[in-house]
Image (cartoon, each protein chain N blue to C red):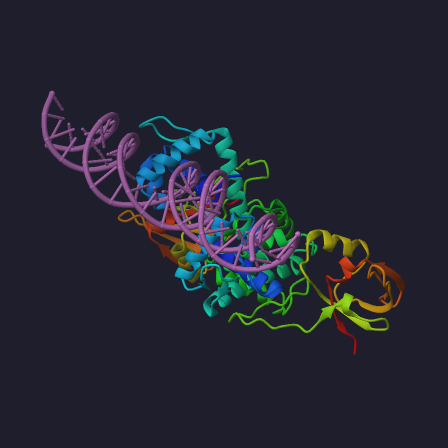
Length: 219
Length: 219
DNA sequence: TTTAATTGTTAGGTGAGTCTAACAATGTAG
DNA sequence: CTACATTGTTAGACTCACCTAACAATTAAA
Ligand SMILES: [Mn+2]
Ligand SMILES: [Mn+2]
Ligand SMILES: [Mn+2]
Ligand SMILES: [Mn+2]
């Protein structure tokens, strides 16, 4: 079994690949807050174990084995988050740090039971997809709210890089997954957008915020 | 915060002290399946951190700080076991190994929530007391069933050294915590005992079993 | 296209936690 | 009281994961 540390590297590799395509030593170094030589060394070790394809000065690429292993850690992480919210009453802004630790527990039955108790969910509390038990990830079709034009009617399905500060910001504005937005105006100067939220009241958000809200066109 | 490893040493020290009084390097070595030199080294390290009083060739003794730290790990372990049984539907014979890992999660809120959800229990699924948040352990008053004489009417309140095999043995004989036993006969030859179980049917158990059943005299 | 910034690599070391082999102290039995 | 068995200690080494300092390669800017 992969160590705690290796699992975290795999998860980071997996997440970065889905965010920025090419993953370099420095990206991982930043993401994990670990020095570049450490990452370099680990890259060689992961290659040795067949999780990674590594060539000097070239971007890091997970192998099929690496992708599957990573997806299974992500699965444990997201199932845990779901369980913490649905069964234990935590807020969506409180669960990530706990899941970051619980994801390393080696006890398949534990996660299977969570899965069952929360009704075999396909997305976590932040709208991110939960890989299945074979490590397959279902891509959810969505776009950034910032890419929507005036007049679009959309609903919030997920977040890109959900951070605690984003989550509490959304909480304080009464925004949650599933809510609908009707784009009323886009400010050409700074890209801030004004939307009719839940068919009730107008709210204006900066481009920074709108870039991180993933939405789906309403039927 | 104490590492995963240190927490396991503390817990072992604590458990052994309550079982055999004097704890030597070899006891720990056996209990943790780690070589004696390793234990010796760790003993020095724990002393350095004030968890242990260590003098060459003398028995190991937890300090007040060590006892408290150990009790808090035991607390996390037993709350987890309780949660796994009560909220997640696991059997009492399935929870120890999972709890052995979950107990190392650093997230007080996680365990506080478990505590709340299972109604602030004072004993775990095997009848062992759950230390409070300050690390105080409540001694439960009980005796070994093997020490009871013919005619005693008792109820099962706990187990000494509950192992998976003991738990499944008890399961297969329909025995659970709280059940009552009426001692009918004690075989002088091998110490096996015949009891009326739950006022229903007679069962005979070996001394080995009866030594591990902790009971309380019925009112 | 030469220069500068970024990115990646090597070399050399540290600390935690483990091991084995060898030896010393302690306790028990004859 | 000596002999043997048990228990504890030291020395030396290993792996994993990390670090800093120095240097090399690549990429971007001037
Ligand atoms: Mn998360
Ligand atoms: Mn993690
Ligand atoms: Mn247990
Ligand atoms: Mn443990």
